[in-house]
Image 1 (tube, rainbow, N blue to C red):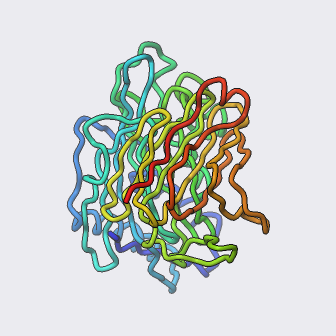
Image 2: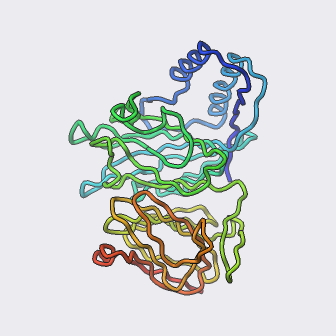
Image 3: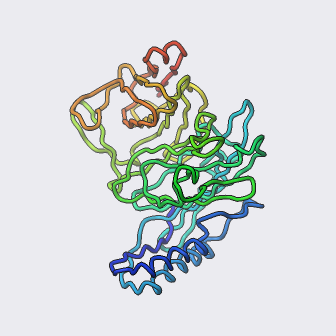
Length: 361
């Protein structure tokens, strides 16, 4: 796994109101967290990136006179762009993803993603508890109307400050936090302890303050727990398996009329956008994990007949789960036989929301 040296001051000193204002002004003007001019898609080398971030924290340390510094988790630097697809849809596309380790070693993992086009769903971003992600969003389509000039990233589940909420001033009463045809925007996400889980991200600003999630601008963030294990239930007993023992992740978005899928091969990290109601494949007796995220406005009842898994927070074993808008449900099963997945709610059956789960030797 790639890592980045992220200096994280622990401010155990008393900060006066004046110093707080000074730091906010410095951060706003010099940190680069706000708007940028994206005339070209480019990346910086790990050395300059390290100097840039280290310089910011050293400045804050000297100004505040604090004495305690601790090392945090990995630092992820990403670039995403938004582009128009046919049929009035839009999509996020990964441009660049690097992670730099605590010793300053940088590794580029961009080749794990689909990079030649935008995909629905968008890229799945994977972090560990303690990691920091800085994501620059680029606008890459010509708007048909003034209402389409704003696109954003709004994430659930992890920590961020007001600058990274990804909403309009109309909502946050602070400022528009969007990429436009002329300016990119940078978001900072903190996968702090306690944020492990699967979380949606989506646009919140295009065309209206509700955004264009219904036009394809959605994706997922997976934060792996610091323990490095996942709870499973086999032969009636609960146990934990190491995350590296999970062969595949299926990130499944349940829309009002279809499933949208993204598959991650954990041996390589390679992501594959699967499209609508896709066939899923797995090797027999491997552990596979489903991440369900509901979109739209309908309630759904996801079923994986003849399989059972633990229902979080209960002692029950289930093979179906009712899930509502932006709710999520994650479970792991051992792939022992083929079956079909489906949305057995009335509207899901009428619309044919189902697909094959194919297990091969």
